[in-house]
Length: 301
Ligand code: GLU
Image (tube, rainbow, N blue to C red; front, side):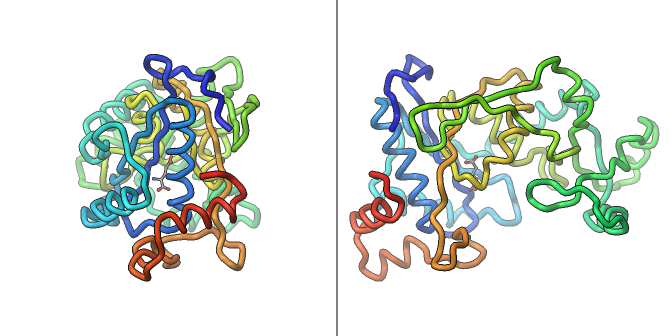
C-alpha cells in the first residue's frame, strides 16, 4: 500500500503516471497498470497523469490514442491534467541529445542491425543486453570527427549511442534508486546501466528514444512515483544514468507484476491479446474487469 506521507511531489503531493504507446488497443495488462497507478495516486492524495508515448512514427496512430483515452475513461480512470503527447516535445529531446553529444557522452552510429549482427554472430558468446540483443561492438565510437562529418554530409543514416564507459566515468560512486515493487517499503538498488553497453538513445527517424523521452518527461511532469511493469525493471538502471547525466530528478520506482495469459506469457498487443474494447463490445462491464483483475492479481484495484 502507498503511504500518503511518503510524498515529495509538487506541493507535497505524489504524482503517478500511466504512459501507454498508441500502437494498438489496450489489453488487461494495461488496465491493471492504469488502475493500480490511479488507485495508488488517489490513496496518497496525489495526482494521476496520462502520457502518450508516441515517438515511434511507424507504429503510433492517432485513432489508437483516441481509443485508449476512451477505454481508460470507460474503466473509470481519469487524469488530473491534459495528457502530455511526446511527439509535441521532440525539440526538448533533441536538445538533450545534442547536449550529451557536445559533452562527448554520445556519438553517431552508422551501423545497421545487420552490420552489428555480422560482427557479433561470429563470436560464440558475444554478450547480450537484458532484451537479448547483442551489445554494440563499438565500431562507430572510434570514428574521427572528420569521418563523422563526412558520412553525415554524404547522407548516411545514423542513430545516436551513449558512450557507456565515458558516461559511467562521470560518477565516483555507483548510482542508486529506490525500488518499492508493490509494497510499502523501499530498498536501495544499485543501478546497472552497463548491462546495456553503448545503448541507443536517439533513433534514426526521430531525435529521441523511449529512454530519453521517458526520463525527461518524468522530470518535466514532476512524476514522483513510476509504477510500471516488471518487464521494464532492467531499463531503470539506464534511466537512472540518464537522469544523473542530465541533472534530472529520480522518482521512486514501483515495478509491478504483469498480467499473464493462460500459458504464463505476458500479454502483448503484437500477439493480439484480447483488447478491452473486445471485452466491452462482448458485454463485459468495467466493474467486472476491475473485480476480476483484483481477484486474479490479489490486490485491491
Ligand atoms: N510506453 C511504455 C509502454 O507502453 C511504458 C513506459 C513506462 O511506463 O515507462 O510499454
